[in-house]
Image (cartoon, rainbow, N blue to C red; front, side, top):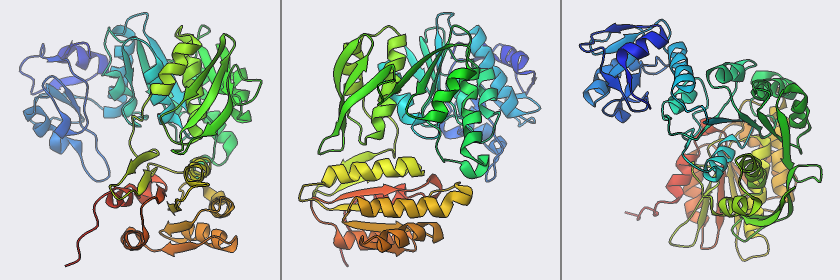
Length: 464
């Protein structure tokens, strides 16, 4: 972050200083909302949540070196007091974009129902120069300005993931940071229960291309009709990507190797090159193609893009995160989140990693959240898809929604069990796993199955 005095920050966020001895004291490090992450020169953002109030931790943040806290009320340590912390934080982000970034800096914004984070990670590894990108999945009104505070005048590209839980949310985020390049990965059924239908999801996601200036670029998934239709909602140029012949940037001859890693021929108007991804799952093909389209806009040639995609590594946890134990059991931790599209893709990758080899495929699944009236049908479809892949074992964990997966899979002829909790599932897995087995663990974030995946990577306890 370009250094700003407390007086300057207070002015741009429309706040007032409290308990500040020196208004010229500088904030020169990125903002934090966890007091444990405060460093000398940082700004602590005091958020009031359901379970904790950040104001109670402002003193601890300042003791760790934070210059001040952004707060709703005085807290006894140097602070900037505002009427609304989130709105003020957004104002700070907008100020930095307009007053700190170099005029040649470009903002890349990514949204979609699935694949946002992996696409963001690919783009950040393809773009040249000094790239600042959203950490993890910090894609809301908190995470976006937080990411912006990581940028300064030396930043060439600011890569921002943008999420939405309602129509208008992305519009609000683009008012903080107007994109030069907007990427839309897909319109799926994630959060369909909140939005009330895929058309409403498309309306919300399309706000990211509506925000583009006339000189901007929309990068759209040509294989998703709802995304492709967004071409009519932007003033900018349009580049498409996908598997079909009509896509500007496309992949052909896609295959998954024994590790579930895709390879393909990357085609663009300038030429072709082979790509072999280091990430697991065929879904990564589309994610990498989006990055290839952005790389073209940055002036890279196809050979450079193919090489960068082929050397890109996983950057975010719990997304097809693969590890092999000393005894030869492979655990795929894909438990960050789940929706019907991503779950099918993960199951397909599991089948590809074990098909035709002396390895057992074991899927450990939990419920998919926020599917509204489609919940039962979507879970049953996953059960039938699991059976169609002829996986060796299906274990579902949790309540009724998970049970719908098991019921449909069992009816279709696959070996499937429904267990009430992670502890029971872990006990069963420890009793049946053998060398060569590949275990996929996936569910919506609230189920927290990453804990089960982590436990599977620990040595079995020695019987007493």
